[in-house]
Length: 113
Ligand code: 5GP
Image 1 (cartoon, rainbow, N blue to C red):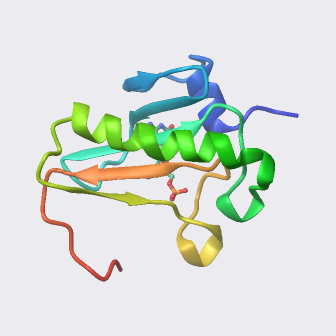
Image 2: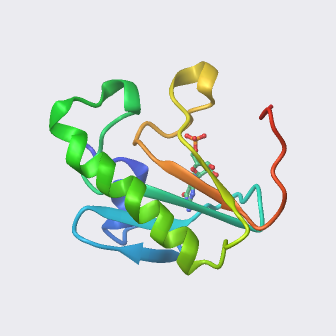
């Protein structure tokens, strides 16, 4: 199985601005930021998308969400932020390795486009 783009970032084969790492997840700056702070947090073990996750992924997904909140705090997003997981073509998913966008540093409109 070939590595996903985000597995290559985790393996340091592709450079990225890494802001947090532990044994289960990696957080790094998005290459095309949509807000003053735009970080992706991903499980190191690739799950294609949330629709493909199963009961065995429950712990890592819970860990990912808790760490997303920690990373947002670490990045100074005390006034709020948005967590986004795009799923499938209509959801805007472009990289088939589950990732949670952490967006902040400006007022984010709702509903999203
Ligand atoms: P999606 O559209 O799948 O929800 O989000 C994929 C995200 O990955 C996009 O925001 C895109 O800018 C980001 N991205 C794509 N390629 C790279 C890359 O090589 N490095 C980094 N840091 N981000 C990337």
